[in-house]
Length: 589
Image 1: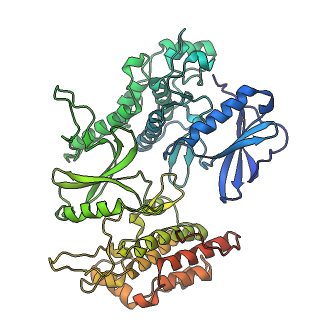
Image 2: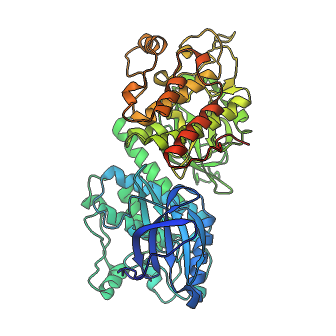
Image 3: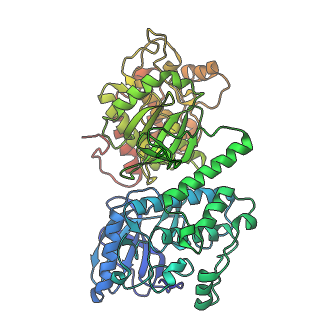
């Protein structure tokens, strides 16, 4: 098992090919982790360096096994790996850099934050177990944070194993006191999903309480507590936390493994279901979670997990005016996804046919900047659509933090414009290029268009013969011509949206301020040319000029294509980062 103390490394900073090493992040029994900048990707990375590998075949194999396991994984709550290799006597792993440190020592977390952390960590563990990997060393120090979006990720698979690997083959019990499950301290230790859930439950307990619940006076007392000690009653010690959180965590740290949830999926669904029941009873609001006859139950009183089609329903991650979104998994493969289901009171219910036709068309798109559509259908006469998992909207990122630096905002706009250009090449107009419809990728570093539900063929009438509106408009970010029901939907509205989005990323505010009524918004956009001068001290002149061209009142005065916008934004961003190359990188093949 892991030692609880760390010793600082000695010797010079190691040299790793392709990485400019910057400083030490931490160290432990197996080596040290350094901060560096990946020279080709131009991103900060964490470099895990394991020494004495040349003299220790077991250390070498352990490091390579960790790298291979990580390379198989793709989930927003699991740490990513970029590369691995060997330099002299050392093995190195180039990992995603998490700038918020770990959860170690972060006790008495706020009640809402505890729910958020539990959902994220259970989701990551769920994905790990679906990949048939046991972590075996979950603890606060191995849960890493990212400041930009409050993401938490499970890290350090140094002692992780494939499920089914015998303890005899391992030669050791993985894990760290006091996070080991009681059954791992017996004569025939057996690691499985429930031992990982126990360690995660102990981690969440530590985050909720003033200190770790397990005594650390000496190893003997710690082991005695793990085997026989009374578990804390979180509901009593933290009466402010959601009952759902207290109940599920108390089950996860039960001494008897049979009293724990059987899987991370069960724990995640229990957390969501009980919390929604509490919300419904306290507010009188219906939770809108309907068990689906397509997949639920066996006819013998055992309903099984709730489903819509082949998708097992998980936690609710968003509910707005029109849509309710849930984390889901494919019933056969366990593949993670996100399901959006129209709410009963949504006016969009009248447009079920258009939504489903849009989903079918979008499912044929294959572009890294357009969110993949996996499935669609109707349940209780309301459309549902399943997409690939996704991160937060750009509006949430900006509203929850601060505006972006100029180069980063331009990089995002170049990526968005490339995706918009992909749709324009196919004769389509996205219509709602605005921060609320633009999604961060699961790793939080990229950005995609949300699934194109309002995408229409270029030249479509804004109002058709059936009197249905063909336009879509988010007022603070809409082009002036989109306020009129007459005329046709043209690609220039997307170009305008790129400008409004760039301004929002740079300032956190709509380009034309705030207004009370539709006529006031229209008047501001259609009669007052955008003035970039207030931004003069914040951005360079090329960026100000790009903004002014994107927000030209007349569509003919805006850039001719989204690809032109992508190339201009990319060029300015690269020059601001010190890269003089002029080779465009945003135009798709």
